[in-house]
Length: 427
Ligand SMILES: Cc1cc2nc3c(=O)[nH]c(=O)nc-3n(C[C@H](O)[C@H](O)[C@H](O)COP(=O)(O)OP(=O)(O)OC[C@H]3O[C@@H](n4cnc5c(N)ncnc54)[C@H](O)[C@@H]3O)c2cc1C
Image 1 (tube, rainbow, N blue to C red):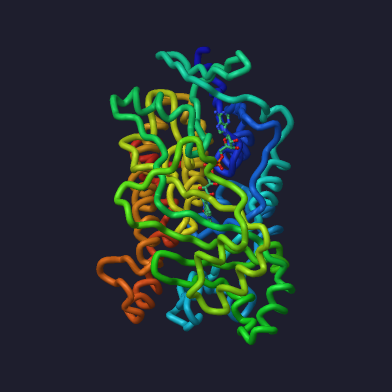
Image 2 (cartoon, helix red, strand yellow):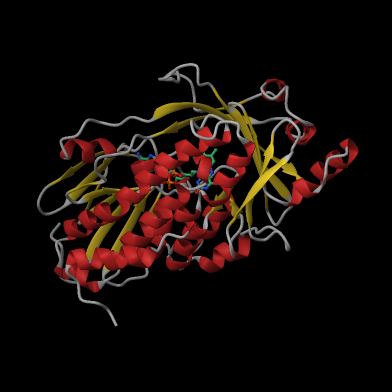
């Protein structure tokens, strides 16, 4: 397909948070034609919580989805509305400090609700389901993606938003002459569950645990383990993630025939937290049927873009969840790409140049977020080489550790991108 003078054809593979958010923005612009391909029979997310930092909340607003987000988002109640997490000792819930994010606090949603809210805004005819991409080709004129059902789609730009196991990442890395990058097991697993907040309140009351711990997001820290909680569904449910890490091997591996997510027993989960105090154990006792997630991540990639094909979201920079930042980075990717593609000057530019600039601006930051997400896990689990179990230093470090991530100026990214493209400033 030739890039027509009036329309740029964009294919998106993968309908998770990053792909759907991008499609939603792009389909509003008359010079863009957008098709999104999802392998599953419908959009779907797991029934767990996901939280967003101030940077991600700004990207959400910039993508034009602030209103559906606002309708389902949770915030911590007044007077704790600015608290991202309170940090506590796992063994007795002793207070170590708090991280404050002024004006945002802990902004979170139920994942499935969020994706539903986004997907419901997508006009008919944009998304196609049951389309599993298997390979990509490109030449000077177009990109072509092939699906397992034998069909194909041709477009000017192809955006891979197909998650950590991306089917398109190899094409990009090969095109760049770089080694391939497979997801790697981090050595950390996470038990996940949701608790009815009234049930937790009653259980805490019965065991003499302060109910404040229900209302305010909490992170309980211990050696090689930590547990986080925050309310979702307007406070009706408490999202719980309990992490355990095996640091005995420098290069941990996960059996290739084992699923990354499985059902787990409560006994198994409680056995991993035997020495922990009531606040943590009562939480876990309220989760009869947790799931266990083997957490994988990607190494920092040497490039997100090859020619007409680009990676966004977890396909580009899957990271550990310790800063609650993975989906937010996917939203920042979507926001910057959408702002560039939405500019009609894209029609008179080489479309590949837009992807190159996206890569140049977004990759250094996303890599830093990946790196610091891993480091955050070391800090929470008392393995940071400089802080270890020094509680005062831990509290002080955590208080300001995330500011650079949340305070990032997305508009300056856009301005720099436009300068690199040599585009006129819009008035
Ligand atoms: C325990 C845990 C907690 C987390 N907490 C947070 C948090 O609080 N805040 C935060 O910002 N992030 C968090 N994250 C990270 C976040 O979940 C991810 O970064 C985010 O969901 C990735 O979105 P995505 O759209 O890039 O990819 P995915 O959500 O993986 O979506 C990819 C989509 O592509 C589809 N697909 C896959 N392969 C193909 C193919 N070949 N062809 C077509 N379609 C395909 C899939 O079906 C899926 O719909 C957490 C992660 C974990 C594991």
